[in-house]
Length: 278
Image 1: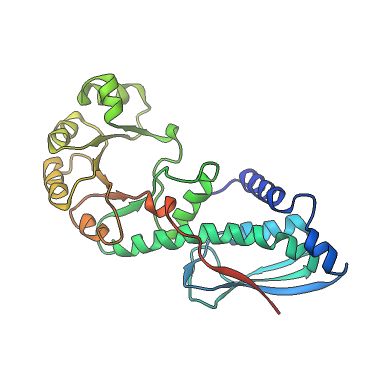
Image 2: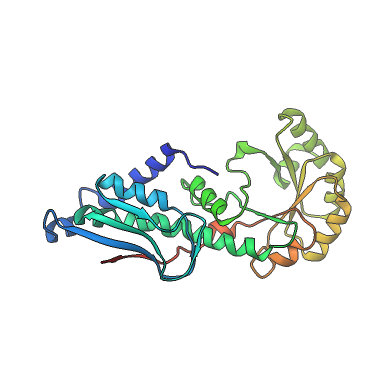
């Protein structure tokens, strides 16, 4: 997952405009012009780092002369107290950019840290963690990037990335088999067609339809095992719903290929990172 420079610039510009407004009133009235400061961006808890290049661009957007040296790269798992970067430059500029840069890194590192917990929980199985479209509106690609950095594989980023037939599609279009046939006939050969199944009867029908992937929705471990037996390798299987750190390992051991969880992006708390002077 790569972020385009255009979307990065757009995020930074919007975030700085939102936070700085017409100028940093406190800093500009209390810090003499020309004052210089040196600081370290420090992790105040164990985290998986994400967003460091964005932080550098944020400081540079305020003042190109700021020196921002990255010490911990995206994807690194670091302990509490680790310096992620050093910042040195005009005090007014550094203070104006501080909160925006920290907000970005705290949010993205929070997602990467949460995702890594799930990835580590299924390590050693044949199952891959994937993310969902449950993200903050307007920040989808950044959440997906953080998920990738955390070790998950991206699911659909947008609705035009693949076909995922759900119960409402089937209800509106007709039978499951007919809906799958329509989708496969109307999409390019390399486009994945997936269908959601709530029951084992639907699983049997879907596996016989020639679909590329089946999504097992809110099934317990025993039904997941039965579904894997029914599919018998005819297509790949994703399971979703009721996925927590406490349940994910047992679900992964049923033989499903993928587990998706919206909790990794939707509910990940921001991590604690500070800018310490000196």
